[in-house]
Each structure stands twice: as C-alpha cells, then as structure tokens.
Image (cartoon, rainbow, N blue to C red; front, side, top):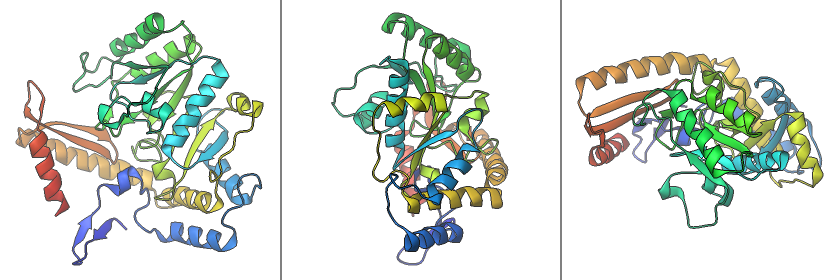
Length: 349
C-alpha cells in the first residue's frame, strides 16, 4: 500500500502520500470495503436526513479531541473547513480581524487566501481583516528558537493594527506547504494567552499535521501543550476521499443556529464511512506509534547525512512530517533552488 507503479511496472516508494493525505496507504482494504459497502447502501441523502454513519464518525472524531471540543461540522476540504472556522470565529466574537502567520497556507478561497501568506498561492482578490505575524521559524527566523519573542509581535499587531479586540488566530502546528516549519518552542502557549486576552478564538489548522502524522501525538497542537477553541482537518481524515471537518465547543457552535448553515456534500455517508474506517485502521495498526518510530529513525538518518553533506542546511519536523532544507551557504542560508529541483527530478525516476 506504500508503493506506486509506473507503466513499465517499476515500483516506487511513495513518500509524498497525495500531499500528506494517505494516512493508511493506497487502497487499504478496510477503507475500500467501507466505501464500497456504504456506496451500495446509501450514497447521498444530504445532512438534512441524518444517518448512523455521520453520527458514528462524528462521535469517534470528537472522542479523539481534548476538552469540550465535541461539535463536528463536516466539509469537503481543508479550504472549506478553514473558511467555516474563520466565519464561526467572526460570528462568535463580533469582530472581523484575524491573525495568521507569515509563510502560512490555509486554503485558496477568498477568506483563506487572505490568511495564506505565500505570494505564489495568492490571487489579486479582496482579502480584508487578516494580519500576518512574524513567522516563529527556528531556522530562518530573526529570533531563532525564542518563541516568546515572536509572540510579542502578535501583541503589537493587536495593539497597533486592530481595535484591541479580534476574532481569532489561525495557525498550523507545523507549516506544511510552507516547508515543514516547526514553530519555536513556547510560541503557541504565549500567543494563545494573548489572543484570549483580546477576546479572540484560537483555531488549530490540523489539515496536514493531524491524524497521528507527528507520531508523538494524534494532533499537532498537542505537541505545544495548548487546547484550541476550533480545530480544522482534512487530507488524512479520509485517506484520499474528499472530506474535511471543523470541531468546536457547543457554546461556540451555537452561533451557527442564528441562520441556516448548509453544505450539500459535507457529511456525505460514503465519505464519513471512509473517515470512520481510517480512524479504526490508525488505531488497529498502531499507525501513530509507527509514525513515531519510523519517523524518529528517518530523522536520525537524515541528520547524519546533514553532518556529511554541506548542501543540507536543516533537517526538521516530527514523526512522518519531515523536511530537509538545502542551502548553498550555511551562514547566509541561501536556498539551493537548482539543486533542490534536480533532486526532486531524480526522486521521480
């Protein structure tokens, strides 16, 4: 299930996993069986007509989260999940301003594109109310690994860029599209405290770091010792099936009862059957433990290569969410763009 084959039958180890999506590998029989059986039984009633599959998966998902994170809204993607989370934060607080991080990626719709801070993913559309804080990047950041110094920038953004009250803060635990950037130690607790004082909600984007990928914990935010108000997820939740979710507390979720919130395909029984099967496979096959053990070994071996080859500037990440950054100059940390492209092409063939 971890291999792909080309037209000539040549076997490749898939380290890409459909962009951090295949939690259980390609075509896992348990996931396939769940999809096929549910497709034969009921494909699409919409969430207007509840069925046991959506309820069972929502309950199982909520049981994997800490605190009072018990209300689940299903979507079709991470972009949709983050859009909904940001809307909930704005409705609940009555504020519009949201703080995101530089180098972040949260989606490609109008709202989430505003929270994204990478020019190659941003189109020229109106994106109001988002402020981008200094990225707490231990490798390239101005303060190194001093998380609380980066957190001070969030205080400054609130003080000088808003009314003093904000809707929320959204962040990944490890930036995926941004280059597997681990946030500096101590950053998340300090920022969460600042956001709470400003009346905002803390949103954890677990689209890539969630579902046991970091090994030591099921959710990426747990590595930082924080509990968010809203958690978003997608990708690994469905093992390749279009599925996303937003999980929050009953108190916060209540704001969506003021109007009619609806998602035609969110909570589709075929997709939620796949999601429930994925959760069961992760537990049955101890994939979280596997991510920790295999990931730790892989990181150790990659770090050994760093000591051997000057081209490797940094090895980082947790579990099976790892990254290697190549540079042509260790002091200047000049990105080795051509060398990186060459290695990527070599890995393809």
